[in-house]
Amino acid sequence: MRKFSLIMIVFILSTTLAFAAQTATPSVDDPATPVDAEVALITGNSVAGAKIQVTGGPQQLSPVYADDDGDFEITVGLAQESENSFFITAEIDGEDKSEAIQVLIVEGEEAAQAYEEESGEDLTAPDQPEVDHDSIETDKLSYTIEGTGEEDTTVLINGEDSGVTVDSDGTFEIEVDLTGNGVEDTFDIRLQDDAGNISSKVRVEIESGTENDEDEEEEEEEEEEEDEDDNDFSDTRGHWGHGHIQRLRALGIVSGHDGTNEFRPNHSIGRDAILKMAIEAFYDDDEIDTDEGDDLFGDVPRGSWFRHYVRIGERDDIIDGESDGKYHPERNVTRAAALKIILRTAKISIITGGNGDFADVPTDAWFAGYVDWAKENGVVGGYDDGLFHGEREMTRAEVSKIIALVLDYLEEQE
Image 1 (cartoon, one colour):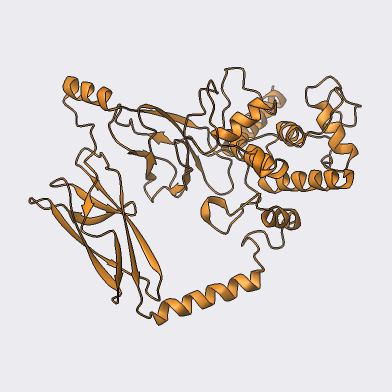
Image 2 (cartoon, one colour):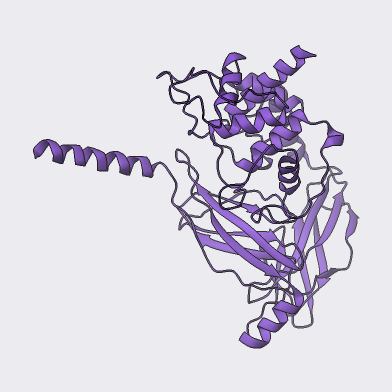
């Protein structure tokens, strides 16, 4: 009985540790829907400091980070007169990305008006603000932007609360700091009402020709650092995958993660991102059209940054949907699925079935042929236990290595 109890304790502890490796799913506040707006605000709560990533919608979005209380908010663009589908995940260092939570926001003028009449809620965004000038040249290092908008709305500048409210006469003024040295600064101005509805933006571009020695010194230091780094990603120097990653960067296949100079080589990679990498690597530019197509997976909304890659993947028999009829772009890709996507995109001829090189790859497994080809051509190897572990998630560095080695193989065949 004591032995049985010990086994049960070990089993429960092991299960707990396994599940502890994944960040908890964030909670998301119910968004206003339907709305008559070009953008909407998604708010919620997660683990303090967690990286919050939103996929879906008409733009690829940079992540935000939960504050010390775990609260977060992110502004998303809305495809007009349609249902917008977003997937929100959380991730903290040392843990896997959380399960995704889906948020649906319907954008439509008539639908919003009908709901407003029924519920009494305000679901219509303020009109776009107007500014006196949208292209300015000045000899100062600061400038006051003047404009008009809906009374008592808050003025947002580049997505942040400016602390300025539109006066009762419909006017506002915001003083902004400028870079100087002939650099053109860009400011996106929006209005937000008390109900949280956000207007479309008006862009103001201001160029100051005044010298700013402090900024020049900072730019020189940054340029020196870039020269020293030899255009490396800041987090790949010394990494085992550095050479493969840099090669893909030089070819324009990969870029900094979320607009930074970080590649995040040890992070898992989603089904949306790997498809983009593979198509950019193995298709000519004139083969990558941006037609979004019709009758695509229900969780790949029109206007999303990855939709045309998914359309190409489905059209060319690179990808299949899941059993529920969806693509699930937010899910991390496994080793088995990654090989299938990469080798199909590269148009590598695969013989069905396997030769049993790995004990955990049955010869009749759907991915056996891909694994055998990759093993025979030096693209992948097994783990120390002699197994392939096709169920494990692939990292961004591992995917980069496979793509680089398959490019080598194709070059040798020419």
